[in-house]
Amino acid sequence: MSHTPELSIIIPALNEAKSLPLLINDLLRQQKIIFELIIVDGGSNDGTGDLVTSLEHPEKIGIKLLRTSAGRGLQMNEGAKMASAPDLLFLHADSRVDNDEFLFDAMTFMHQQREESGLEDVAGHFSLKFIRSDEKNNGAYYFYESKTRLNRKDCINGDQGIWLSRPFFNRLGMYDESLTYMEDVRLANKIFEAGCWVSLPGTLQTSARRFEREGFSERQTLNALISNFEEIGQQHFLQSAKNIYQTQTSTTKIILKPFFRAANQTLFLNGFVRGMVNWYRTGRYVAQNAWQLAFAVDCARNRKSELMPGKGQHDWLHNYDRWINLFITSPVGNSITALVTAVWFYGSWLFFKGSTDS
Image (cartoon, rainbow, N blue to C red; front, side, top):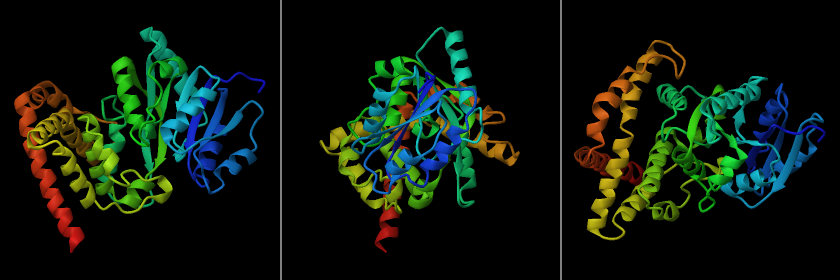
């Protein structure tokens, strides 16, 4: 390239021959910014790699193809090692961008945030809009799209894009490659501890295909189980439950019964007393996220007022943070939350056992 890139965009891919060209075409239309694209193919068998090498692109934009073993954390780390720009943006292959100055506006905002704070340890994420093929679960999608406008823990993941400087990424230790999922959440949590998050201008579109193929409530229930066991340090569940996170191209309807069984076995893997400790820790984690109930009320009201996701007042959330959160996250509150969660867990397990056994 005759131009030095300001931004390296790293996209892990595995059998994304249908989605990836759409994203690349969106990016090639970007104005006022010089960037490079690094596509990291994890062993596709649908021609994804050949498609990338055959693309025509402007001379000022470099497109690099790197082939690695499968594993999104590994793929993104290898892509980052190849990057030549000071800033990195990690995107998923099924993302879409509809504004020709999307990247320029985000870059300008990131520079402003760094200058105002005097810190380089700033990471940015975009808000989301789901690309859907049906009108089911409208209220739930509104809630999740609204959550992506927040800079709170457990609200940020790789679907939203992760933008940060290359030195900051290296100091964080890059992505965790020990598992083939949760690598984005682990990095997000490291950023909360070592720096700060900001919401970038613009909305990134992402495919809802996983929810539509696996079942919306089933996917969200399984995500909740995954997040909980990650938080309480019981990775045995993540390792023992087969097909806990299938690749996008091989997703099928989720049957929850085996996951409830695996979760219960993990909780009591080291005996009853240890199981009670794990349930208390689960209650603590759920209590930390109980604010989402108040936020859901705000979202329902704002949606009824026909406001866009993220717009409108968050009075319920504000009052929860001010008056209720301290009690809910206390030891007593954690215990109560653990009990309520256990009732939900075993009740749901019985429901799904009945629905799948019949």
